[in-house]
Image (tube, rainbow, N blue to C red; front, top):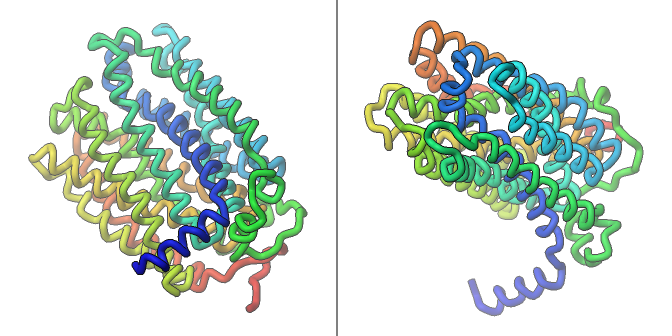
Length: 441
């Protein structure tokens, strides 16, 4: 780039301001805590199954209790967050999940199954507010052309949480399982600190004293003006665009499979024990982080180069689906490290897919309906995950590793089919106005 052009662009950036990235950093922190909290169980699963004598079906029941609450919470939290606002909604969400996250540490062997199911249920309901809040925050603070990259930044923190979990658990929890309660308590402290910072910092950009006029104009540069009238979730439910997003979340079952069953698969097939789980998780989730950032950057770059939002998002989704395909071969591999790399590639493709599917919502719907649509769509993904977890638990109990074979085949092939349905439901991605009618330009 010509130095004079570069300096002019840099001066423009400084003049506009970048307070929006401070807000994004807080969403990044909350999502890191969120995923650290939910990943702890997956990392501890082999050890907890020994301590409490759980079967595969018992473990899948604990996962499903989290997922049921997560699904119910998404439907409720999305509407609540749109109604009371991001600041209060996010605070309520993280307060609930912090309490139930710490409750895990109080569970005793005599009622371990029902105790963990109860704690995971509360944790799931609280954590359901994270993504509706996060996506709504991005919609409020970033223009459309920057939303995929901004979403990619905060969504990459899911991998940070997943990476930290095995290392911290490995440092704290002994080989015989002593101190397994402590990691569950750590997240409560982190969450409390976050709430204090969030409550002091967050306001909408138009109400924030630290947002310059130029930055506010930039944030709203490609958005339609909106009224303050609330759009109930029941009104967005029948829209084709809602279901176009919802079917993209069916692939959440794949991500949850990596998260909750990945450590067990590596232990069963390749002998990766509790003490050596950190490096495989580091590799897989660093690759996932790269997928978040690259996928978000690429669709934003295509838009800035003149591509329509419709074309840029869908082409990025298609490329992501193709990158994921090789993960289908993982169950037949004999090389541990090749399997880890292919799972990492699948995770990278999924994260690129995920953040671009998230941005379909604020690309089409008004900002004030964003959390409701995200909640409805993510609920579909969680219901799919519940069915998948239940089926996998039964198959693993009855037929051993056959269950992993079919899980990876579906994990690799489902994305290509889904992108076709998205295009059928939403061929042009025409934005909707305050009354959810298509905007005629």
